[in-house]
Length: 231
Image (cartoon, rainbow, N blue to C red; front, side):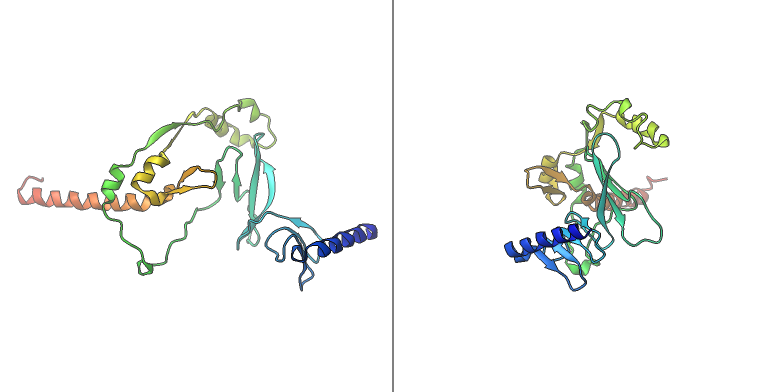
């Protein structure tokens, strides 16, 4: 133990000599490597327990573990740091890109219209220009039922549902290129040149389109009543 401590001390001193900003001892005794803060890099708290974590943290939890949910790939797990009862697998991502979460997915929005919101006009026309498709699914390409059967990472009660998913060769969705022409606010681009759709951004448009149609229906009903054509 003493030899390991001396070795670590030598390594730390060498790092200090090379780059002061890559090493810091905080007032609480915690040591940060490759970082002047406790937000990323290798963190060694005063307890001596080393924690290596990616630069992904929040007020409620941190990525602290990766496990194999199936034989395809690893899955990131986010666990709450402070919670009255333990919750496992609060959030995880399959290697095929599917994301599963416990609870509701919440988007931050301004607290009131007074924060500069603009009412959506012409929502019915926007929706009429949107197209939905059945798209080919390749998320389970190369996967066989044997990959799930007798797999220690698959709970027995989950096997039937996974086998059903394995037989699905279609998904429903939209083309980002088309949607960008209609509602660009719901489309995003990543650094690799891919396009993605924020489907939750379409919900407010659907709400306003429903309200516009409901207003038209009520107007037509009023005309029919005036002419005694509505029973």
